[in-house]
Image: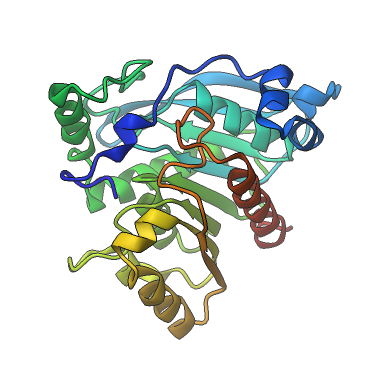
Length: 294
């Protein structure tokens, strides 16, 4: 997915309203989210977030960092989808922070454009808008992924809210999925868990395909959550991943989420699937809970 000839995600992005308890209830999952996210449950030590800038060898990246007001917590790096850093991902990061993590969501396109990378309501029928985001995506390479991963993890390790005795987790959506694997390969001694949600391009024919980096990730555990329509287009990809992780004896939960379409996890997606998104979220929390333990 997220290839030049397959841009279904343009039909999914909608305006991002403020996330509220009422909106949660409308989705039918409000109670469960409130329980997992103290900020909405009225917890005293609610997550606090701020815009940050991170210097990299290629410039200055803008990002969002959120964590509980007190204490030290495992760090998590989130790579967003092709629409970039936006309110939906800040809200998801806040929810994860409420579960006990210090979370950094980055703008992967900082070399070309600061946030927002895409307009609040992307025009799914405008070819120029599609080409614009594809051009942004094409500024990212296997090398920039490694360069950025090292800079972003270094930033996390410098924060008082991050417990550096514990490994860091990485999560990625759509084009962020392969960036999770590249992050784990670039920092094998620091990354303890990786979660890919409807990741595109995890398995390719290229010599630098993300799946070929799996032998470098022996200290991490993984969750690969696959959209049903992605699996229909590339049914062999999940088997290649299972074989690659299995050969290296790396724990990896790889599953096709039935009824979930590419892009089903972000809350601002038109194909957002509340039940399957909650399942994916719970599997990520379980992975981080065991893989990032002290």
